[in-house]
Image 1 (cartoon, rainbow, N blue to C red):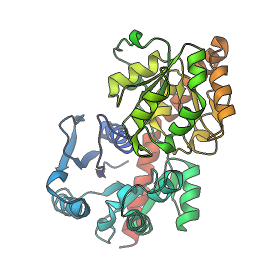
Image 2 (cartoon, helix red, strand yellow):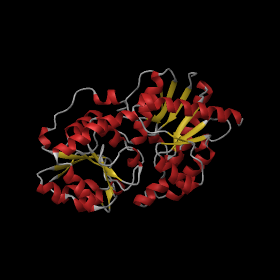
Image 3 (cartoon, helix red, strand yellow):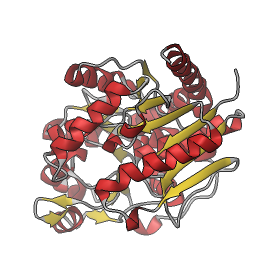
Image 4 (cartoon, helix red, strand yellow):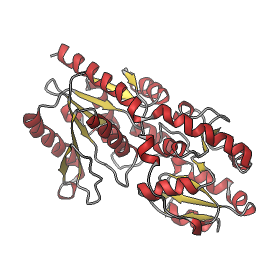
Length: 373
C-alpha cells in the first residue's frame, strides 16, 4: 500500500501513561516500521518515551487554561497540516480534542476508548463540566470522517447511546516479542502476591476488592499488590483506604514499563475486577507474560478471555464469584493450564497482525474523505 502521512493526537503518551497513550505508542511504532510518516501531537513530558523515525510536536498545557487547550491543539494541527499535509489524523473521543478539526479540510478519524458518558454511568461525575464535554465528544464522533472501536462491546454501547455508526472494530495491539523480552526486576521482598494493575478508582472494582477480599489474602498468606495511579474514593485517597483495609494490601503507585513487566511476571495471577472495561492493556500485557487474569463479564474482557480456557471471568461486583475465582487460581495445576493458553491468546493481538487492519481502515477513511470533498 502507499505510504501515508499520519498524525496522532494524544494528550498522554508513554512512558507511565494510560491506555490511550499506550495504544498510540504501539500503533505509531508499528506503522513507522512499515514506512509510514508518523507525527504525534502530545503534551510536554520530561519522561517521554520517544520512537525512532517518529516526529513529535508538543503542546505546553501549563500556560493555558484547560478550556483553551483544545483550541491550542487545533491551531497546532492547522500549522502542522500546512507544513506536512497529513493524509489522515486520528484522535481519541476522550475530551473531544479533535472537534475543531471536523471540517472539510481535515481527514479526521476518531478512535473510541471509553467516552465520558460511560465513565459517568460507571463512576458518577468526574469533572464539573461533564455534560458539556459529553456533548462535545458526541459531536466529534458525529462529524468525523470515520469512527473505530477496539471492541464490539463498546461499539454497541456507543451506537445505541449516540445513534451513530461505528465503522470498524480494530482491537488494541501489543508487540508481544518486544514487551516480553528484556531484563526483569527482583520483587522477592514483596513475598507471594497477586497483582492489581490499573488506576485506583471505583470503576476498576476497588470497592469490591476492599469489601470482599481481605480475608482471602490474610488466610492464604498472600499479598495483593496495587500498581496504579491514585484517585479519590469517597472523600479520601483510594491508596489510603486500601492501606488501612488490610495488612495484606500493599500500594506501590504507578509502575513504569520495566517495573510493570516485572510485577506482572512475578505475580501468582492478575486481578482486574472492573465494573466494565473496553480492551485494557493491563490484560493484554498480563496474557503476553503468561499470567492468568481474572476479568469481568459483559465487557471487552469477553473479547479477550475465554472463561476457564485462557483466564477467568466473573460477574461485576459479585463477591462470591470473585472469591471463588481467586481460590481456583491457587490450584497450581489449574493455573498453569490457564497460563499456557493465555500466552498463546496474546499472539492474536500482536501489533504486527493488527497493524494491517489499521492500514486498511485508514485507506478506507481517506477514500471516504476524498469522495465527500
